[in-house]
Image (tube, rainbow, N blue to C red; front, side, top):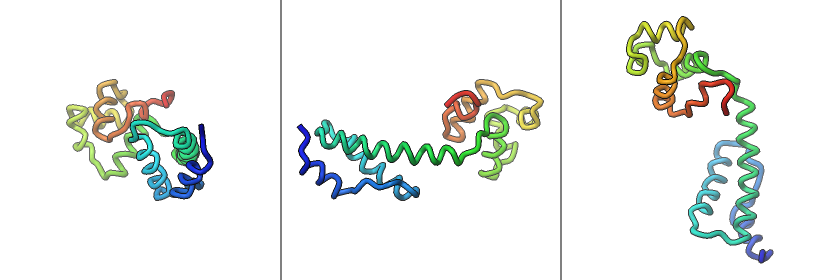
Length: 134
């Protein structure tokens, strides 16, 4: 049974508010993580977690809308530019600098192995390199 007092205490400890910055997001996520680390949640905590989860979801959806739909080689070019990488920096993934060049000039396609290695290298899901996956 949910009690108003217990729920109100949760609201007072960390009042749920719209998330408008990375700092707001991190603070909200920290509260969510503390709740998720508990072995068992009370009904009040479950409801509170739902509210915080909705706020986080809304914020993430807004952020997603700000990210252009870039995939494959175009994404690779952007990641390289952001991190000031040169073709030679990716030889460990593509085996030779000429293959890196061919991929970047779209003379060759990214292979499944390339995508797997790039996802490890850049710490992204392989799905970010495919336009139809999310």
